Image (cartoon, rainbow, N blue to C red):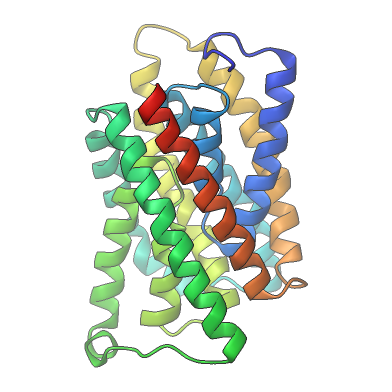
Length: 271
């Protein structure tokens, strides 16, 4: 295990490589790279929850910038929808950051593990439905009040993303697709645009807390490789998403989620 205050060159390089993988998969699916990054930083590199969460949120903001540049150039982002959902997303991110600052790290890890398993199950279900060519049933209530549901969903997504240090795309993508009837490509692109708001708003709060007593060298050592790695990965992911079948990406991501949930629970049990 690598201690928080002793990040050597090898550890920084390995974190950068993990960040590239996280950014690639996150950008390809529009859900940010935090679902991979945070569990790996905590369980493998022994980074404390606060620093892992802050570094991930900084990286999530970079993912949004990097991926959005590609998606905006090709016209995949629904800017009108993104503009409408910005306010509830940002408010949720700020609320989540204040809640997360006071929670016990082990509670955050357990919540994160549960989220990862839920995402894994959901992705497998979507992959199977997509492989069969089956559509999903949409509740009539969602059609009548879709903008209200989307706004509340983005508020909740902002809270979850900030609380756990992830991008919020795990809720944004389904909301855009199932509630607002956006295509998979537009959902991923617009979600990538939105997660920059949650990442930036909540990262500022966490960084301020960590640097209250002066500069935080650990945060700097984490933020640089994760931000650079995720930016590179986000550029790759936004491009490969056009070439790889949706079910294949979802199955691969599901496997990673289950593995990461196991690593986090091992960390909770064994410390």
